[in-house]
Image 1 (cartoon, helix red, strand yellow):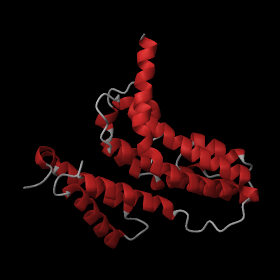
Image 2 (cartoon, rainbow, N blue to C red):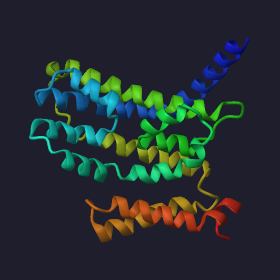
Image 3 (cartoon, rainbow, N blue to C red):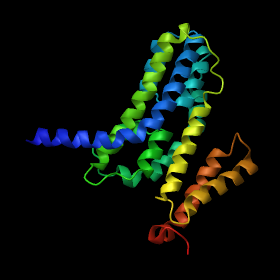
Image 4 (tube, rainbow, N blue to C red):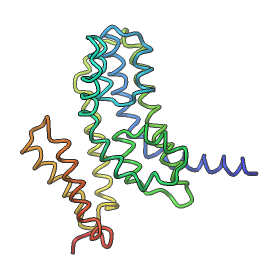
Length: 243
């Protein structure tokens, strides 16, 4: 009886999580194939992108790692580059402290597999009543991980047979985030009735972009947004707005 109940709970969580990941599937499939092809034309065997997509699971770092593997290995340089590229995950982690609390051993995989897309879904999604929160987030993370692995594997295996210009495919991810943002804006959830938090995010990002430039605005923008939302946590929590 317990196993039957557990199975129903897992199926319910999977069915609730899957629709949220469909846009990610499209983006990850194209980018994963691009990554696999890139590794292939760089001289790596098909199992390199497959192994890295399973163990590293950080798209930008995986592209950079290909160049690192082709040159002399400098551990400190690799560490510094990885921290600079994925420093935003520090802010993701802070934001998810409460949501990951009480998820048991699943927390280990949730932390490992937290990419931009999984964070966006798990932080903003309204989990249906009766669906286990921990398993919902687990399946979101697992599905996104599988999508990326699938794309990287296909690109690595069939990369030598594919002949087309992949320039511009990276814009798929930008478009996907715009869709996610617009969906949350239309719903008005997690943003307050006046969309204060979303407008703050856009405004602070634009200011940091103007001050620090395109290459160095990400971390200051994330820090500014985190600080602003922390200061406005109580007003937003009470009524969603400042009035």
